[in-house]
Amino acid sequence: MRVAIAFGTRPEVIKIAPVYFELRNRRINTLMVATAQHREMMDMMLEVFKIKPDIDMNIMVHNQTLNYVASEVFKKMDKVLKDEKIDVLLVQGDTTTAMASAMAAFHNDIKVGHIEAGLRSKNIRDPFPEEMNRRVIDVFADYAFAPTRKAKDNLEREGVERERIFVTGNTVVDALQMISKKLPEVEKGDYILVTMHRRENIGEKMESVLKALKKFSKESGIKIIFPVHKNPRVREIVFKILGDCKNAKLTDPVNYMEFLKLLKSCRFVVTDSGGVQEEAPSFGKFAVGVRNTTERPELVESGWGVLAGTSTEGVRKALEKALNFSKSGKENPFGDGRASERIVDILVKGKTEEFKG
Ligand code: UDP
Image 1 (cartoon, rainbow, N blue to C red):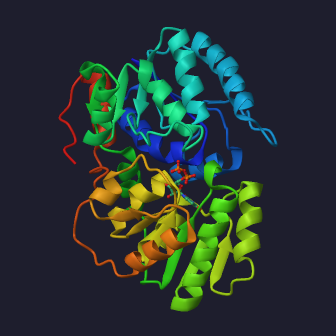
Image 2 (spheres, rainbow, N blue to C red):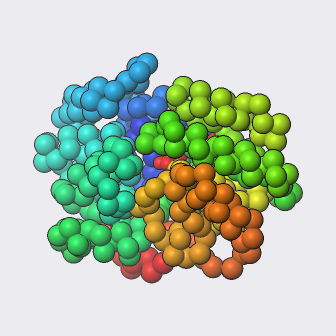
């Protein structure tokens, strides 16, 4: 069997890395195909995991549009799939890279495995364009690797045949367990770790969240550490609102080790990132989701977080809740660190025991 893995952004690298290592450990011929949709942030993460792409499409250009990315991936992935003998293409999550790569494989009658299938916010435009991407892939993926039972339920409701669905846990938990082993002990810090960059939040929503944070930090004396995404539109807003805030430390994006260290020692997290919400419970941290929809209801249901929305008042209430949170000793609802093992079992043997979550 020959497996190809397509990826192009930071979160994809984190979440496919454990699958790649599992395939390699089982001596399965694996081709790593980078689109480099986000050149710098993807490279940073490849460096952490010491992964070298076999093929690098290097598609990123300044001010790229979604249709530019999709058309480049279609064209270049088509060639890769025609040149290389591939049995299964694995894609992860909800990026344009994942959607266009998966469709290019479908057009070539090559099997597709979708890691992190079945996440649904139920609003096709939020997150944009991710909700559309993930739905499209699940229409035809031969293997829909659902991280949780809720994700499986979503797929079944949409009519995805049971034989295509496998509940595996989320590979992000595998990834952070791999990296955590190398993390030093850290002291407890008195700061909120913030990340915010989603396309649909850019503008007024981001401004009102950051204003609420600034006020809260001033009143409570709790600092803010914020590794700011490379997107220039994000940077402009963040520096405009928090640039003069003495309590806020604004940095460039940090590498995964550094980020997990920050996560390990913070008071709690404020984020619009999917991956960060999934990681926080593993470190016993409460997560405030600053978005209006979520495709990860497990966070709120398990008590590890809250969906604050983006209004100043909603965020203020959520920050107070986070401050009073005491660790409940619950497990991470997103995974148990064995997702990649299950995914490779399914590819090789066609079956595995489910993640119960
Ligand atoms: N992350 C990182 N450095 C940073 C900020 C985030 O390594 O400065 C990691 C974080 O641990 C998480 C992932 O990047 O696993 C999330 O990426 P992003 O928020 O871009 O994507 P999403 O998860 O929302 O798809």
